[in-house]
Length: 87
Image (cartoon, rainbow, N blue to C red; front, side, top):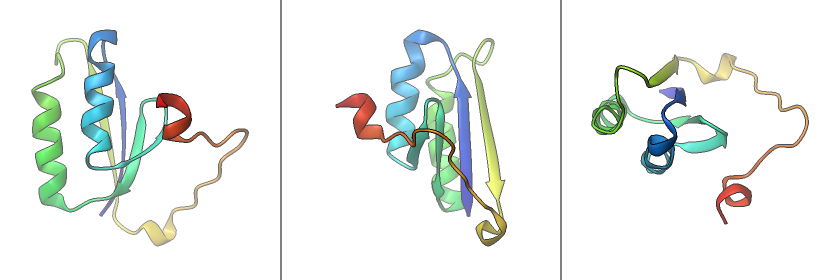
């Protein structure tokens, strides 16, 4: 399945969440990751994320795209690269 995960977490946990999601998905832009992933790996990823976040203040949104052939992605402006931000 194709998923898009967005997050809004406390400043101290941003780096940890970003690093964890990078293990499973492709960074798209600040606080957004996307990519193909199996249901099992998605659950594993989310379990690991749950151990990092503070559920009282942090938010994680998971959008599952069951048929990515019907999804159109258009980037306006600068299309950022993960390496541009973190290298």
